[in-house]
Image (cartoon, rainbow, N blue to C red; front, top):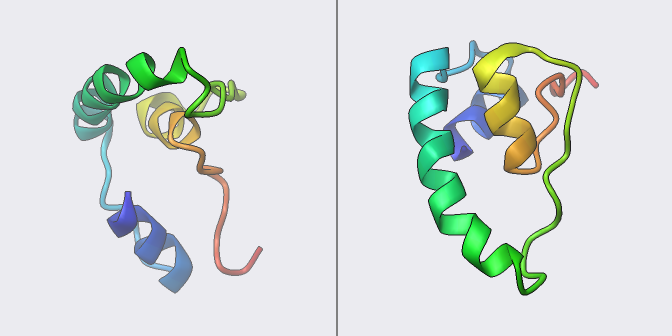
Length: 70
């Protein structure tokens, strides 16, 4: 996720593609869902589509439309 943050902040293309995002989401869900039951993580924010990359970014609390230009 830090690579995406840096790319978005510097105007570079996203290092994520749909295949990688699907793999990362599966891992993120395994890590996050247990502690989420105890309130350690915010609820999943649903969005208006955008594919697997956007789904992963929203799940991890990022806005997939964010850029350094606002």
